[in-house]
Amino acid sequence: MQPWFPDAKLGIFVHWGIYAVKGVAESWSFFTGEVPYDEYMAQADGFTAARFDADEWGRVFAASGARYAVLTTKHHDGMALWDTAQGDLSVVKRTPAGRDLVTEYTEAMRRHGLKVGLYFSHLDWSHPDYATVRPADPDSYWADNRFTLPEAGREDPERWERFLTFHRAQLKELAERFQPDLFWFDGQWERDERQWRMKELRDELTAWAPQAVLNARMLGYGDYATPEQGVPISPPEGPWELCYTINDSWGFQHRDHNHKSLRWLIRTFAETIGAGGNLLLDVGPREDGTIIPEHVERLEGLGEWIGRHSDAIFGTVAGLPPGHHYGPSTLSADRRTLYLTLFDAPREVVAVRGLRNAVRSVSVVGTGEALAHRKVGGFDGHGVPGVLEITAPAALDPYATVLAVELDGELDLYRGAGHG
Image (cartoon, one colour):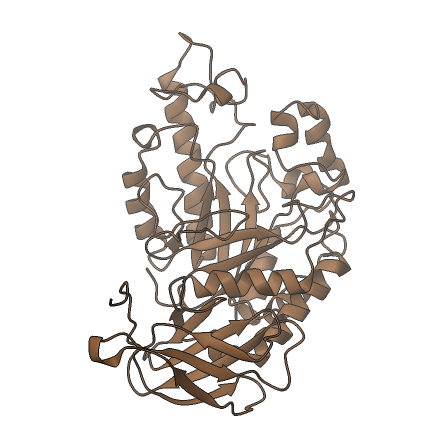
């Protein structure tokens, strides 16, 4: 695991492809039969990227406080956004855009100081050699779909080997041409590890792009977990990242106006980093490459909040376990400063339970307001600490207020059941 990743905290996910032309679900719309395959692929004729400004993307993403971005170089529909030499199914050869969009993206992200992530779908529902083998125990959901598996008894291992050659060749292009900081894989579920030969792929990727972090959709050979669309109640062990949409769609869908509020996105971000994860927040640009104003506004608003509270975000680790504070928290790398996030206005005090440390000071992050504090109760003779009571701040952040609690040493928590 590269050390930059756990401290990045925020990334921007970009789902962009021909599906934005009619605003249908990326790839899944033809897989489920919502849109006929030929009609779906005909959207290529309307994909122009006419107003795509990669530097504007970089400006907005950097303004959000993000440290990395991830672009869908190829979704399950097989349409590549770069100039691949492996066939002609790319926006360079098949759409009016007519140019390599991944090159523009990677160069702009680096100009704006962001790490470069590339999404790549292992599966390819457009490739003629993909639906040629079946896993040992195929999920019934996939078993009867012609894009996924051959009919029982009609497997063709030689064609599957041809697909793997194509799969590896595309990944080698992306790795060697763009030297990404991160590969974000998807679409692994329709085959087993043996069929994908994932250990072999891990070794190949390490040789082609040794600096690249790999997400966990490698069937046991990735670096970090990727839950979707909700902060996990019990966070995964090790590094992890929550991928999350601003509305209800990954790609652009003109009928989807159910945008989450800035307040809600800040809450989700604080809960995610408080549990030790990164937030990968998704935007779906229009076919012309512009990002809708509602998403730009939320990204910029999130960046303003992050800017006011950066000490409590970067250079921190997961904070208190549940039960000690009513809200998320983070802890400085030296474990001597505890940052408490308050979503709601406290009536009189903020309480922290189970803190064995003496407290040197408490202040409001961003304003510096000093807050009075005291210990209430406890059973010192039996090692049961009292409750830290902090006077509520006079001024609150409009979205979420953060308090810095300076400790007399490394965080020391009581996790017992009391004494009696």
